[in-house]
Image (tube, rainbow, N blue to C red; front, side):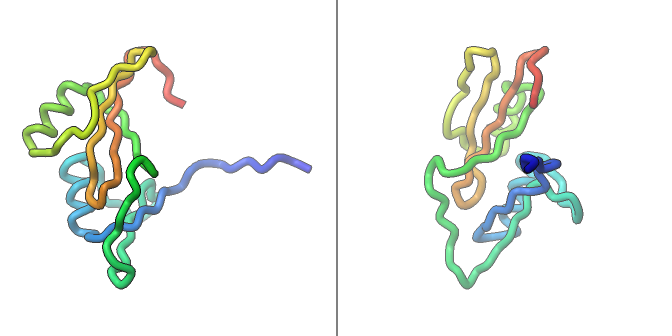
Length: 118
């Protein structure tokens, strides 16, 4: 018997309360684009099930940024609150957390030169 081997992560699905507000956050604050294929983050809304309540520390998305200092300045200019950090790891990476709509946490990480991302 052969071990199961997946090829790649296709997408992560997140249910949100307000699809328009959430899309605005990901496109305006994080600079992501809405695309129609090969989704990496799939957003869905189902109002009849009620408001989404994300349990604290349950799930988060992490994105690499070029400069954490520049990212913090841009977030401050947009009025986006940093909920944790900046923190520096023993490997020299620096990161912060912000909240997306519905309480999903977003981690923004600056990696030092030469650190391989797997």
